[in-house]
Image (spheres, rainbow, N blue to C red):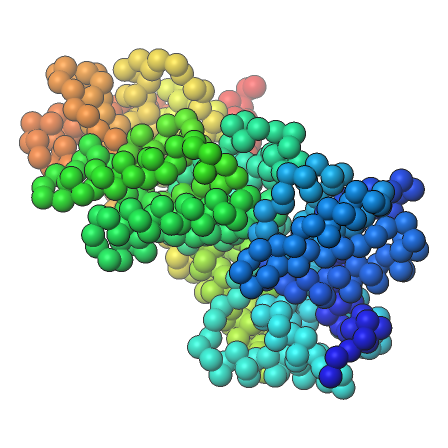
Length: 620
């Protein structure tokens, strides 16, 4: 049975879509007095008929039906769009709203006719709440709407059929999804501006969105767009999610690939053909975000050896050719992700290719709260979120998403919204530090601070030693430094850095009379950092006992040097011991400062840089 327009327009889905359409029209200036030609790009994989009805609703409700003609671009099963009707209407009418499917390239004659091109956002929880209230007079919470929108949209409005409550619909959706393999919902409907964290990467993405709009409107040349990004960071920090969010914010198509998928058949010709096909697909969908995962698998031509060296060199050359600025690359922004940026060929990172490199760190306390809020909803108690954020120190974004899924699973099985008890049940317990352990940690951090201050290593921003530690991160404290950037560093600067890094161990020996395992045992530890600095001085900078040079790129190369060269290893050990003795001498001379600072951190848990300066310089 075919519904007429009035019946279709009264459906819950069309009503919810109307709020997104209204917001896009408002941004485009349609509600001002002057008529404009506006293009609205609907969300990916959505039916244009629903948005056509939603647009008609909005124009009628705002009394713009007489001022604006509307037209929806239809796409055939072969992927061809019907543009002639749109072109005719744009020529004849001053006020036009053109609905454009996502991922369809806009011809130049249409683009120059449009005053604005806006991306219609996905249905938000607030839109769904308003639609349910408007059509059903049924009270619905934002959290319930968020739960609904975590399911595929085609299922949501089937479950919300007339006569069925929101709670019943959620129960039906839960049963339907759990009947299949359980699939975690990912926040691909969020733009990058709504993602917590990401710092410089978020700034880059927002600038890119502005530039892509300029390119779409013909006011900016593609050569002026920063269209290559290397995104590095530990596993689980959300690099893939970030790339999807960038596509959402930019209103661009999203294509993903990896060396593993290109290499599935094994032969070089098949690999290169698959790679070129991916780039061609991205070009056909321009503007497009092409996401290349595990990019370090491409390798570095300077390190290829053995029988496969020629194969690997051809792979790198093929990717270099694909990344170079040919006309087929116009409209394609490449985001490559890796856990090991130093393993990538330098030629891939030169200007015009992946020239921007941004490192994504594990989320800090505030970012962890924001991530949990993103996945669980704003209705959760701030106190519960704060506790969960403290207890998940060291968690990646993916681990936090899993925690949120576990909480939602508990709530789903109880057929209710997520509660504080659900979150507490899946959050790891904080482990309190006993007084002796915490005292040792405070002395350790005070040692870093006093030695670094004595040697003018930098300005202290903060010192902290927590009272409880997360089971995923046994680091109890740290000193955050603000160090000046030097164009050329003398030998003394490197030696002072080693002494500062070893200042914690020096303070343990002098003040406590014993040493703990807090200085070593893991990558990034004090001993690891000090050994790397000493190796660089001895093996590459000529600042040790010889003038030999070795080419190294990363910490792994430095470790290989130490393992393979016993003479170098002895020189490094000698330098480390000399700087440790220097740090111990400073601690002996300023033991009272170390004790006073350790006591203050023990009492307050966190000291600002200004508080540290007052404690170390009481006369000032």
